[in-house]
Length: 169
Image: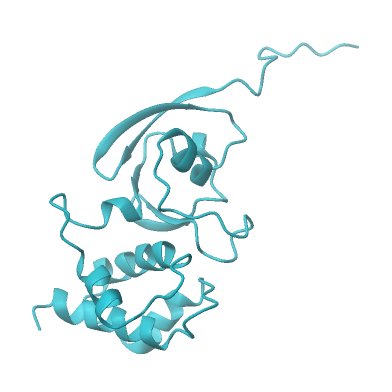
């Protein structure tokens, strides 16, 4: 018995529309393309990094509808119709650094910088929902990110400093 397939080409690229960093972006993605590869390859937003490709390292973290999401684990077609925030959209439109970026710079919270975009996006989500996080809350967020250079101490300090700046302190 033969089963007919109503859609024989399951690999054909599909049109998708995303709002990325406040701008509507249209593109085409094959069903197997993950979000981070779509952002980097199709939209040329290369600030989000590809690390382990298993959702462990956190380098590919972006915000999808305001929630930290591993871009390597989400398919681009699944993101159709969502709002995506990447590291390129963290600073102000005029180019002024976000308080997180300022604090990371001033407190030497980065070295090679590979993990930094993902960490900054998760920290931005934290600070959007908790204007005065404690060290434990920051460390909880960081538990989903691997940094091989800094040892996390300056990262924690920078996130707490950014929270204080954002509160006007």
